Amino acid sequence: MSGGSRSVLVCIDASEFAERAFEYYVQNVWRQGDNVILGYIPEFYNFEFASPRVIEQLLKEESDKCNKVEEKYKQKMTEHNLSGKFKTDRGKPGDALCKMAQDEGATLIVIGSRGLGKVRRTLIGSVSSDVLHHAHVPVLVCK
Image (cartoon, rainbow, N blue to C red):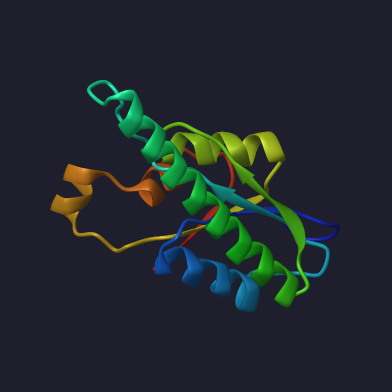
C-alpha cells in the first residue's frame, strides 16, 4: 500500500468498538491523502410478523440512529481533517461491507470487534469474522 492515495473502508455503527477502531485508524494507520469511506449497515429486521405500524416505527428508529451515527462520524472526520464520505447499504452486514469495499475500491478495511468467545460468536455471528474471511483486501480488526 505504498505511494499514492488509498481508499480505506472504516466500518462504523453506534458501538464503542467501532469508535475505538476509527480512533486506532486515525492514530496509527492514516496517511495523508487517504480517502476514508465510513461504512454503516443498518440493523436488519424480520418484518414477516410485524404490523405496518410497527414496521414504520422500526424504520423510523433505524433512520434516526443512522443519522446520529453519520453526524457523529462526519464531525470526527472534520476534527481530524480527514477526507471521505459516509456510505450505507442494506443486507447481511459482513457481506454488505465486503461488497461496499469492493465497489468503492478500498485497499484496506478497518473494523471493530466485540471480542466474543467462540460459543457466542457461533450462536450470534460475528461481523468482523465474516469480513475477515470474505474480504478481497487486507482487514484490520481492532479489539
